[in-house]
Image (cartoon, rainbow, N blue to C red; front, side, top):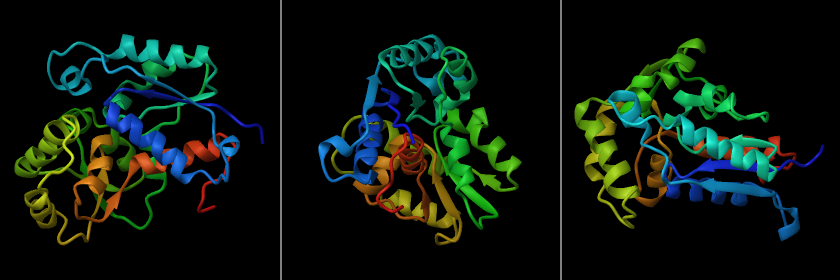
Length: 232
């Protein structure tokens, strides 16, 4: 199989972009530099907030998302991946701006869910209100629930006041307590529906039975690029 160059449309936020690239490196079967994947990254942190654009009158991110996609295509990327769940609300508009494929993180994630009648989606209000997960889950006959206001406040705090502010540590005990109430002691799997939550799960010792879209996307990208994952 021909080897492909990955383009990461990043900056939303920079920590998530860095984490996705790290996952690609960590999960690629390679024994020396030259066996790793050629990866191009455009981490434009000036892209307008996606949640504000969806739930209020915030500036649309579409033009800058399209511009980043074109930058990566022109630089030689063979396909794109986007480490931002909320931005997939604008997936079709981004895809129209380029002539290369874009792996759809939400669809790739749902395709990997097995034996789950219902899942919890831990995400921003923008991702929740856009329905990007709800629509795909429903199409695959999987029920979807979201945090109650108390847990949503904890999710937001982790995303915006911990990860995006670069905190090295965070007391997640109240989050863990509230999630355990909702998922009945981890009987229900929870999708880490914000890329910052993927980072937070490890960094802040979040407790739950998690499905990690960013890890799924990293492995899909490795294989799509014509390489093997370490667990293949």
